[in-house]
Amino acid sequence: MYVITGLGNPTKKYEHTRHNIGFDVIQYLADQYNISINTKNFKGLCGTGFIEGQKVLLLKPQTFMNLSGNSVREAVDFYKLNPANELIVIYDDIALEPGYLRVRKKGSAGGHNGMKDIIAHLGTQEFLRIRVGVGEKPQEYDLADYVLGHFSKEDRNKVEEAIKCAADAVKLMVQDQTDAAMNLYNKKVVRE
Image (cartoon, rainbow, N blue to C red):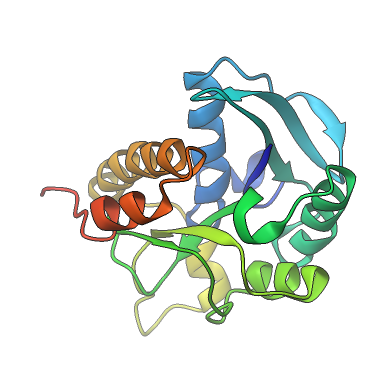
């Protein structure tokens, strides 16, 4: 059993913003595997199903980004999972250009408030994660305004491809092939 959570903010206002890229990947997986994300549980919206033969819970925390740990911890505790190999968190990263991914087995929050909260609630940095590049904020922008903003058309095209690649990485990770996912997708650059 895996809990696969994508980070984002609830409500239509934030749909398809840079900060909601995790929700976009979860929705893509749900569509690919016919999993309905319509159950309210674990302070989130979720649905269970199977990806490549593995039972999964797809989770979109509804606690707002900075409190994501509440939702993730409830799901991990309920299913009595070991976060080190049964939790996958997908989230935005301003240190990566649009179209880039980074798959990791553990690591710090890297300044991401949603990840800080998850690490604080779980008491560990050891869990699987996929960082999806959204691009560095321009100097004149406020960080919050930037991550809550929408992609340019050109960047959105790159990000759509990255969403597919992130979903493909998840497929490998739930088959205990995280190293293969790292080898394939940490080098992945969406073509211009």
